[in-house]
Length: 376
Image (cartoon, rainbow, N blue to C red; front, side, top):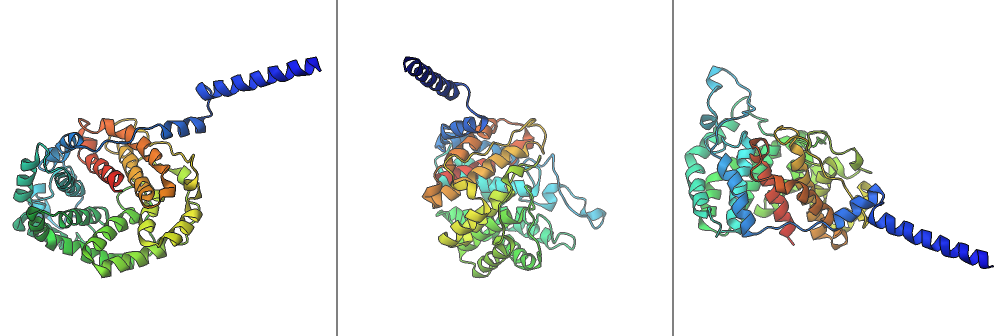
């Protein structure tokens, strides 16, 4: 009996030491990730951050070169400088980045009207978003070979810019929204024409992702009460995604992703489905999200001077905004905010002062993630 008692005490001590060592130094990799995530500090979205972030769009929206036009040319006359082709959206390396550069300026000015560069931003918006410039932007989209230009990523950001202006209670915003409206109308028409023709959704982690394009367009449709566009998006999203099961999130990310195919799908379905239907759908699509210890490794960037590899910083921000949006709407997913915080904590410190490969567009992704974080 005495020997048994000694044996039991030794076993208990060994178990306690082993547990302590595991807690302090020897956690399983999965447990380490969970602990790291749950202790990540929430992001800061303050006037101080706005004063830093505004430098990114201010630097790029009037920077004409380098530039990736992405155009199909009909003849030599189409070979014109970016500013002639796109007198408003010619900067930030490509058209869509210029568009969401303007969205960034509008969004920061709307939220932080007292920021240091506020007057400079207002004057830039007045100068560049004018009737003549927007008329030329419309002409470009009406060109014979430009029907699919920026489909649907750039289209989505144009509607997000229009939404930001339309929901901003400021005389300047209403003036700019009216000036932009002819181009907004062109993009809405393009959505209405294109979506019925799309037989299969595009499930990639880059620009052409269908779920992303539907999400921003849906937000616009809701904000302005565009019933036809809203109804079409609801119908097509249901047809594309309602029967999807067990999304393989473990396959993500691909090397150049800045969007998560799985999470972007959740973002649109969260919007269009009633709560009970959405929860049932999500349980079949990504049931692991309901687990309190759910973890998701951040997208790691090996070289931020490489324009494609730096996409993974964008992935971290876009994952974060989807997770914040889900948690904001459904309190039972509050634990996902820790995962989102972890993603922002990885990429945000590299944002301001980074190379132009990321600096010309990543600010918008960070701002949208922060906006979603505070939208509670």
